[in-house]
Structure formats: structure tokens, C-alpha cells
Amino acid sequence: MHPSDLEDLGLTEEESKVYLALLELGNSYVSAIAKKASVHRVSCYHTLDNLVRKGIVSSFTKNKIKFFAIESPRILVNKLEEKYSKAKKLLPELLSITNSLVYKPKIQYYEGLPGIKNIFEETLGADKEMLGYTNLAALPGIITREYLRDYAARKIKKGIKTRMLSPVSDKAMTYLDHYYPKGFDRNLVEIFFVNPKEFMFEYEINIFGDRVSIVSLNPDELMGMIIESPIYAKTQRAVFNLAWLGATSFVAR
Image 1 (cartoon, rainbow, N blue to C red):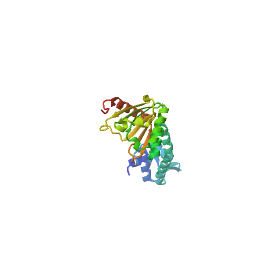
Image 2 (cartoon, one colour):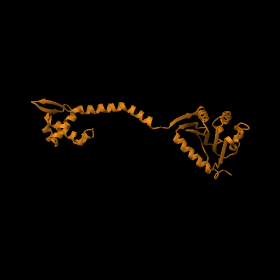
Image 3 (cartoon, rainbow, N blue to C red):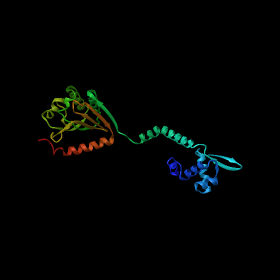
Image 4 (spheres, rainbow, N blue to C red):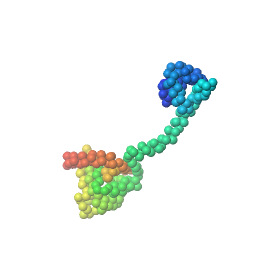
């Protein structure tokens, strides 16, 4: 066995040499162990004391001479297993400290029509403005018309300003007339219609506060999620504003 094998188990280079020398010699005294390990006698004495403190070497006095011994190599393995067990028990506490220092996004998943409605309800918690991408013509295909009208009415009542990008179509162009309250403040809703050949959105994405909601517009795939992360929401808001600025170049004619 090479001393480096024991170094991998946590012993220093000299501790490994001294341990192997003592293992070959059996019970022995410092000078003999130092010679066998090819280390300085004084240094060997300190190293042996360290190994005694670690519990893998024992010492006794015979004829006024201090001897050292290794009762069983299994003790070294047992000590390592004890350390591993202690480390494993500490892991949950260490992870909890890490989690408290590093913010992680909170992600909630939703399925089915009730889940989609829950996502829409959460967007009504927007403080000031909601930004997003959608396909207005596809919305009635995944959620009831009654709910869409009720949702729009409550959003207007709360004074939530909305800016959206949507592919243009006859149904999309008349969406506000069909689902928003008559006489509502048009300043609260801005929609840029884009060319569906270039921008056919199959998901609705809403950015509000520190959250981003994502909803599938496929009736065979009723699912969605809400990601709560200030950094992610800030990034998505910047991307939307960039798209909004460039949208006039792609407004469908």
C-alpha cells in the first residue's frame, strides 16, 4: 500500500507514512517507527500524538519507554464512517442555511380548466401594469366566454393597465368589443396586432409584479405555470418592452 492511499482518507502525508510503518512493526517505540517511516524522530513523535488524538493509534508505557500500537485497521474505517454519518446528519441544516441565503424562484404548476382559471385570477393581483403575449382569437377555445367577460370586467374595475401583443385576425380585432365592458376606458388596454405568419403565439405569457404566468392556448394541452422571481420578471419585462418598441415595424397590414 502506498501512503497516498491513506491521504485520500484524510491523513496527512507524514501521518500516512507513520501509520503504515507502525502497522508493519506492530507495537514499537518512536525511534524505530521514525526510521521505518523515514521521518525525523521529533516530527514522528508529534505525528504519533496526533494519531492518538484521532483515536486510530494507542500508546502505553513499558519499562519507562513509551510504545505505540495499532489495535486494528478497522478502527480507521470506523472513524471515517462516524465522520460520514455526522456529515450526513448535518447536511439538511447546511442546505437550509444555503437556501436562506440564495433566493430561488418559486414555480407553481396548474392543469385543466380550473388550473387555467386560477392563473388568470392570480394576474388580477397586478399592482400597476400587466404586459404580455397572447392570441386573442384562441382564448375562447380554452376558457369559457362567460369567464372571459367576467375577468375583463374585474380587470378594468381594478384599473389594471394592460399592454399586449397578439397575432391579427378578424376574431382578435373584435375581441375587446365582445369581451370587455361597454364604454370601458380604452386607455387601460393597448394591443399591438402582429403578423401571424411571423408571430403566431401558442402560449399566453403575462408579466405582472414579480411574477410571470404562462398558459398553453392549445385546448388539448390545458396547462400552465406561474414563476415568482423578481430577476426573471425583470428580464421578461425588458424583453417585452424591446418587442413592444419594435412591434410597429411588424404590425400586420
